[in-house]
Length: 441
Image (tube, rainbow, N blue to C red; front, top):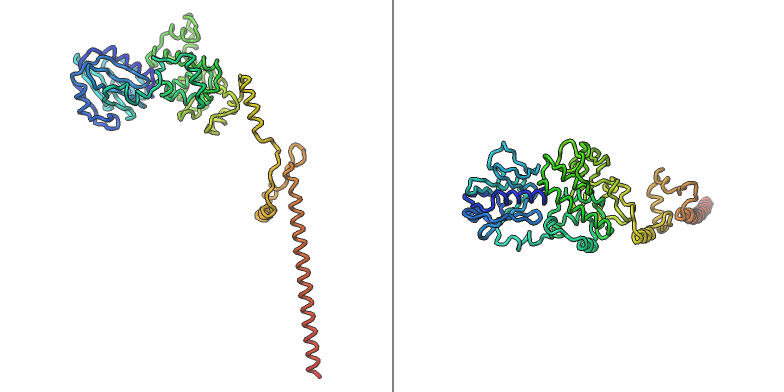
């Protein structure tokens, strides 16, 4: 989706080509999902005859300051984009309108024709964008709820360190939280964390001072670089690339290092492989894996981005663990982390700890309920590495002995009953014999 660099590119294009000009005509689409809280005719009336004084932005939101309120604001959503006829504005690939398409595009939501004939269009293919008409866009949601702009109001290092210490959430989710810092979206968050060598599921409050400084530097560098090249992918200024790459000065260009496709973004950015399939995505020869973090598909390099400490993020899926079995290793644990690790180990149950044996009645039911060979095999005590069975298994003979005693008792009762029955039968036979003798006499 469009993020800070794409929205900033649109703002700069409007500021350069449209400010100081009056809106001669306007056409607003009849789309209540995108055009929010105002009818198309009301928005058209609010634009026509007004002069565009400035184009302003905070985070991923842009609004036009006219010579009098109300002002139109644009929340770009998943595929919102600004186009100016005859002017090359950034072409975000999911919202790009071809020069061969009709003008204005069938996806146009707000169209404006300026007094000098220049035409401006805000388009949205997927209809997740929002266009509003507001008296003071900065004073009401969603703009009033945004955190400091990542480009215009960057946090100072101490502010960032203190803010992160208070957050017990995954760093990727925190970067995507627009109330924490505005303008950072999915691809920028992945790039920043990769360049800073921080795992996207790392708890923010557990980041070291060194990690915080690296994160602060990479947020500024990635965003400024993306804005400098207008968030496009056609060509790049070589001098800018070498200045960006960790302070390297311009020099002889290495075609492999720069990238044969002449992309504006350095070849060592994870950006180029974010949309490739798992198993086919690599950066600098290192494998890229994909997990869910902050509710979004997240690209990271397990070899470089380690999850520090034994505590994992609550709700982390088993799939992410399988994808990166080593991610919970403490690569550079501090003394405090080592102590925490020892406490965690003590809290974990020890292997081979005795299990509680159920009641005699329950054991009897279990034994009689499943007579299959598989069940019997499970009941047998297993040896581990030639050692004696666990203490829990030693209780089994006691249960068996109790069963035998009970059977013996039942057997004695049965014999007594049989003997008594036999006596009764013999007594009855004797009485009948005596009666017969009397009859014969």
